[in-house]
Image 1 (cartoon, protein in one colour):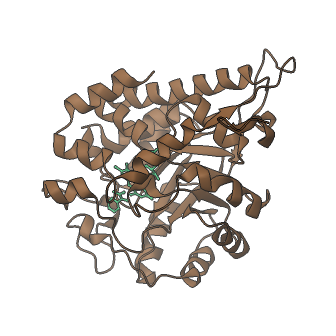
Image 2 (cartoon, helix red, strand yellow; image 1 turned 180 degrees about the vertical axis):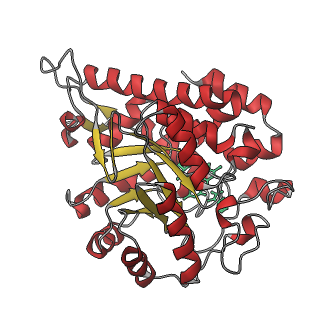
Length: 355
Ligand SMILES: Cc1cc2nc3c(=O)[nH]c(=O)nc-3n(C[C@H](O)[C@H](O)[C@H](O)COP(=O)(O)O)c2cc1C
Ligand SMILES: O=C(O)C(=O)c1ccccc1
């Protein structure tokens, strides 16, 4: 459905930047695996129980939204389209989707939220955070997000070290070019804004650091990058407001399972205490339906939104979100559902393994 937009993105982007977005760690087995995993699931519809009027609304931390599709945090939008994060923010707000803007954005969070507010009266922008080894730097970032009007924080925990993006290493793309900066890092304690090397990652971060983050803010905090069900349990016990099952779109480890294959066990561990979100490989409305039936409250999309942005700016991101949500609503109707929670666990089967 969105093939034409993706092709346009490929044509218009500098090949090095295209590779930055498309690529992943190692041999990119996980990049391929995230998408491929959805091909192994099928939906078993229920019949004669549907409705003309469907309600796909979802309650997420700091956001009730009309559809269960969130724009996942991705870096460097200004590098990919002159409209940058502002264009993405306007698109997400206009389509009623949560936008997760982040530490690696090339537009300051206050400007991102301002752009979202131009496009809709009540937008929802979350801020994605890399925990800084220095607590005062993390705290300064948190205050920026709070002051800007973000309604939740997303802390990414799958990056104890930078991912080794094979194509970037081959292309020599290891930092932002001159003229671009990770704007949220500008002027932070001890952090000159020279680019992505200012976003340090540390393998010595621990659950204690998450605990400290939860104490320094009253915003809900979602934990992004959980694959092991035991970690989901610990996150909830610490007070996380949500768990995001994600392998970072295959950009960190190239030896992990497909994200959607980790979802059922995480959903079981969380047991409805907080919403579970999933990102990685969502490309069509039926993928959204599979994820919801396997226990997700909502899904995130990374690359699809970026391709839309690169191809057509705000209009491209809007087209991606609208298409996914339309397809999802149509799939829900075909499954005999009227709301998201009608997609029950027993309506997803492994292909070739129906009873
Ligand atoms: C170009 C790019 C940049 C990304 N930057 C970040 C980031 O700064 N922080 C983060 O938590 N995740 C980041 N991610 C991961 C996404 O949030 C998300 O987990 C992933 O893209 C989902 O997979 P998908 O692209 O198949 O939808 C990035 C992904 C891409 C493709
Ligand atoms: O590219 C990424 O996946 C990513 O998460 C990131 C992290 C720090 C700076 C830039 C991008």
